[in-house]
Amino acid sequence: MAKKQRILVLNGPNLNLLGKRQPEIYGRLTLEQIGKKIRALAKELGVEVEIWQSNSEGELVGWIQEAPKAFGAIVINPAAYTHSSVAIRDAITAAGIPAVEVHLSNIYRREEFRKHSYIAGAAVGQISGFGVQSYLLGLRAAVEQL
Ligand code: CA2
Image 1 (cartoon, rainbow, N blue to C red):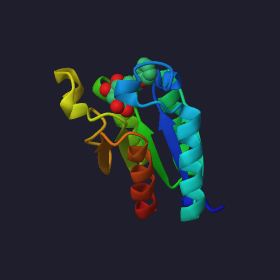
Image 2: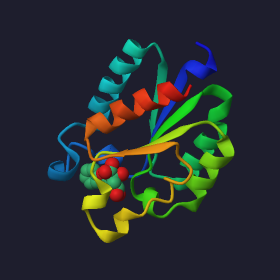
Image 3: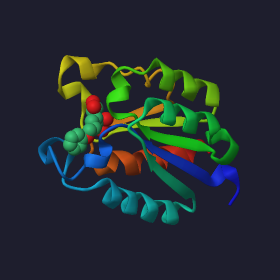
Image 4: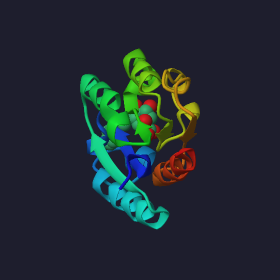
């Protein structure tokens, strides 16, 4: 499939723990189960997706740097790096392909420190608070950007 029709879905630190702890905030689905729903929607929309997770800021930066070679857009849940990472923001800006920021929880209804996103200024937009639907809406938004 042409690189333009391929979307990279990135997940930041601790999202590998989904489904195991804090279900009241993040829901009961595991990252694998979320991935299945993303893949099903991707098929329906006629795009290819790769879904990767890392607990390492450097690894995420590396993947974002390489993304334009193989992908037309990025959907990213930067997790805790949302609130701390200038490096991920800069990598998204440098990559020059559209990125959609997604969050399972509504980051504006939680602790003060979660209300600021370093990523938002580099993303085309942000979807926050809809659980797994944030990813699915994010994928739809990314497809519109291709
Ligand atoms: O709501 C989101 O998607 C977040 O990006 C999730 C991050 C959090 O730091 C952001 O403020 C909002 C946390 C991901 C960690 O996920 C866990 C899942 C299960 C148990 C513990 C953490």
